[in-house]
Length: 101
Image (cartoon, rainbow, N blue to C red; front, side, top):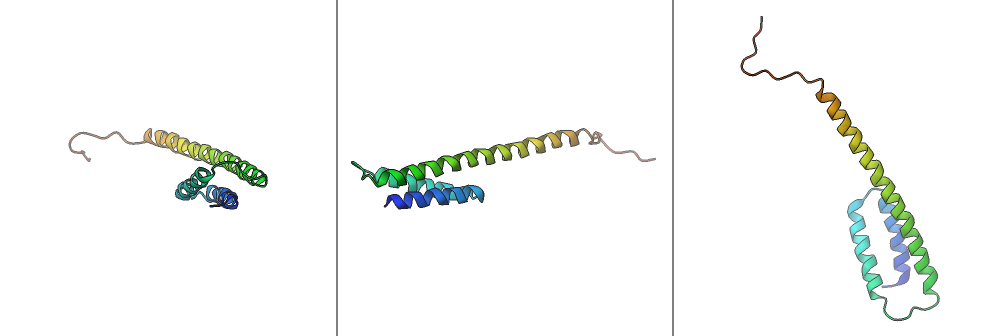
C-alpha cells in the first residue's frame, strides 16, 4: 500500500461525495485507514507533500459532504412542513355511515 494510493483515494472520496454515492465512502474510508495503519516508523521526506495533499483534499471533501448533508436536511424539513400544511386541508373523518341526501 502506497502513499500515492492515499492521494488517489482522496480524489475518489471527492468524486463519491459529488456523485452522492454514500455507500462508496465506506469502502474508501476503510482503505484509507488500512493505508494509514500500515505506516510505521519514520517516513521519507517525499512522503510529507503527498500526505499534506491527501489531507487537504480530504478536508475539502469533508466540507462538501457537510454542505450536502445540510442541503438534504433542508429538503427534509421543507417536506415535513408541507405535510403539516396539507394535513390542515384534510376532511375530518366521520364515524359510521356517511349519509347522502
